[in-house]
Length: 461
Image (tube, rainbow, N blue to C red; front, side, top):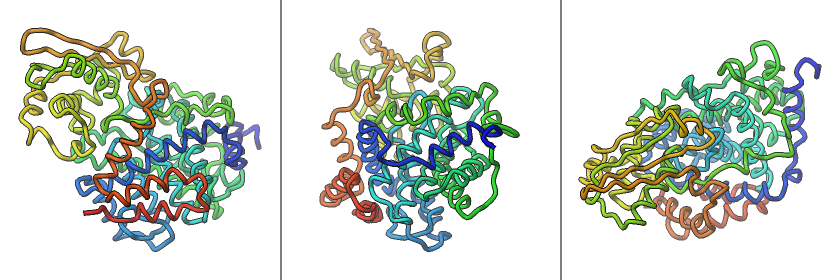
C-alpha cells in the first residue's frame, strides 16, 4: 500500500506520530511569539468596523449548532465546524497577522482558530494547542511550496486558502488523535475541499478576503472529524489519480512535501510578524517610505507625488486594488499623511476625511517592474519608493526585506506595543492585560479555556 501512495502515507505517518515534545525548542519558542501576535489581532477583529467579522459572526449565531467551542467576541458556544469557520474569518480580517513571505501564506490566521476550537472540544492542553499551530503551519507551507505559490498566483489561486485546508487538517488530525489511516483520509477530504480564488480582490468591503481563511479552517476541521468517523476519502491525494498538486499548477513537485520532514520547520521559522496592517507585499515599500519620511523630516505637504516600483508578477495585487489594504495608492498615502497606519484604516476610508490622504492618493502610482524586482518575487517583495517633492527634488529608497521578517525581527518592545495597540481598540486595560498573560502562559496551561473565555467577550465599550 505504501508503494501506491508514498508521499501521502509519509505525511500521514508524520502527523499521526507527532508529539509536542518532538518540536525543537526554538520552534516552540517562536510559535509562542507568533501565537500571541495572532491572538491579539484575532481579538482586535471583533471591532464593530470589521464588517467580515460582524457578518460571519451573525451568520454563525443564527445557524450554528450548540457545542463546546467559543465563538470569538460573541459569548456563545457552538459546534467545532462553525467555530472554525467564523473564527478563521476573524483571523485574517484585520490583515495584521503573521505571514510567510516566500510561500505567500497567512497560516496563523487559520491555525489558531483551528487549534482553539478542537482543543476546547477535546480538552487539550495549551502546549498541545501550540504544537498543533506549528504542525499546521509547517504542512501548509510544504503544500504551498509543492504547488509553487507564484504559479498559484499566476492562475488566480490563493495559496493561503488552498494549502491552508491541508494545514488545518493536519492540526485537527493531531488534536483529534487520528491514526495514520484516518489521517490519510483527512488529507484526502481536505484535498476535495481545497478552494480559494484571488477574485476576493473585487470585494471592496474586504469580507471575501478573510472568508477564505475561515473556509480553510472549516475544511480542515470537518475533514478530520469525518475521517475519525470512518468517512471514505481519496487515499493518495498527493500521489496518484487526480493528484491535487496538478489540479492547481503545471509546475507542481511533491518533493517539498517530505524533504527534511520533521527536521526543517521553515513553515514556522520563516514566518514574519507584521509591523503594518496591510497586504504583506507592501511592507518593504512601507519601510522604505518611513526611512525617507523620517530621514528627511518630511511633512505631508512637502510631497507632490508617491510612486512605487514593484514586481510585475505581483503588481495586480497592489496596483489600484479595490481593497484599501491591498492598494498602494491608498496605504502609502495614509502612512505618509497621517504618520501611522492602523488596521481600522482598512475599514474607514481616510480619503473621505483627510484631505492630504486624498491628495496624495490621487498622485500615487505603481511602476510595474519586469527586471530585478520581478525576478526576486515572491522570495522577496522588493519595493522602491520614489517621492517627488514640491520643491522639485526627487528622493528614493529601496527595501528588500521588511521589518518583522526573521532576518529583521521586531523587538520585544515593538511586539508588546503592537499587542497593546491592536487590543486597545476592543479591550479595557484589565482585559488587555489578562489576555496578554493568557497568551504568554498558554504553554503551561492545562487547557485553553482561560484564553477562550477572554476571547469570547464582546468588545468593550
